[in-house]
Length: 166
Image 1 (cartoon, rainbow, N blue to C red):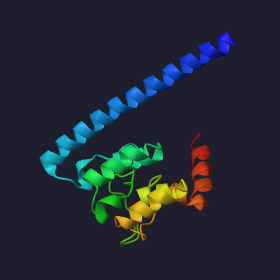
Image 2 (image 1 turned 45 degrees about the vertical axis):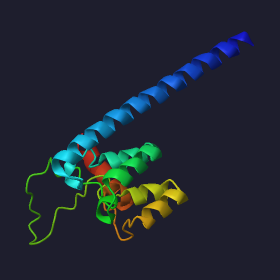
Image 3 (image 1 turned 180 degrees about the vertical axis):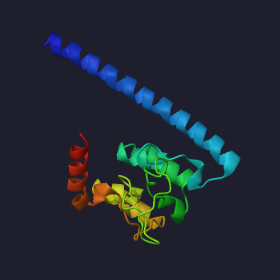
Image 4 (image 1 turned 135 degrees about the vertical axis):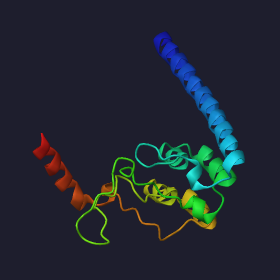
């Protein structure tokens, strides 16, 4: 019994450390957001997309940091356009102007999560309250996620292409 009590103390201590680290990171995040907001105003371009085209607002909801995400929405993403900001195409920084040979046709690569919004994330997580909140704030119902992740028919081809390169 004493051994279990000791393990519980360690787990409790670890949980408290994690809570403190989250609060510290939250403070740093909001300090950074406030600095950017004051210098350029709030728009989706104030953030550089992450490695998969994500913005901080997306990561808050993907990582279940819902309360932090809601604060960011309320303070910095308060317009319907900003709430509906999609994941950017993560291939854009790596791609040079690439022609398909067909006029006005883009290459088919859409990145991994291109187009996904926080409304999509809330729906996937089945968070009814968050979905209602985002819709009340004007989140777009017509946003379309076009990334490869959302097009399973493209995935086998990708795997086949990777195998042929090996």
